[in-house]
Image (cartoon, rainbow, N blue to C red; front, side, top):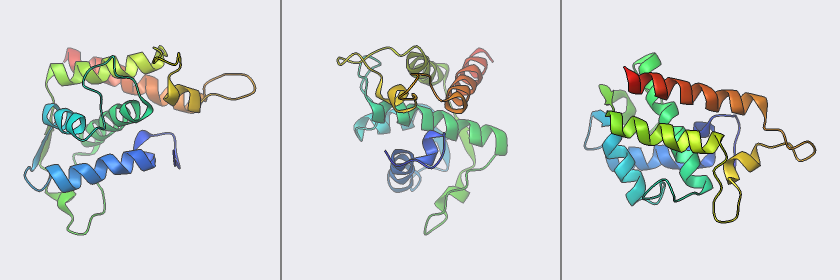
Length: 156
């Protein structure tokens, strides 16, 4: 994993997700639809078919999608440099309660360290201090904020 910050969008895998959206989705849509994007990410192998599929990439993608959604909610725009500035053409970002629930459950499972078949949650393991086993506080706070915002958004 190449990362330069605590956010999932600040990683190579986050940039891969942005690339897929740029190449496969934004050329056909000016309104982002979280339900459609979740399906696209499943088709592209960036998310598991269901929540029992646990993988670092799937967890990172779920976090990155939540970050992207809240970036739109906070700023009303998405700033990603692409050759044709296709991101500037986005006019809205919609999400059903079902899509929000999927992300909320995925992120809650990350926080609760629901294990994969190897009894680990790779994304959490990467943020743990090797000496004391504590999760990096800034990353954990970021995850908690995403969970809180998803829960609030789902209730609204």
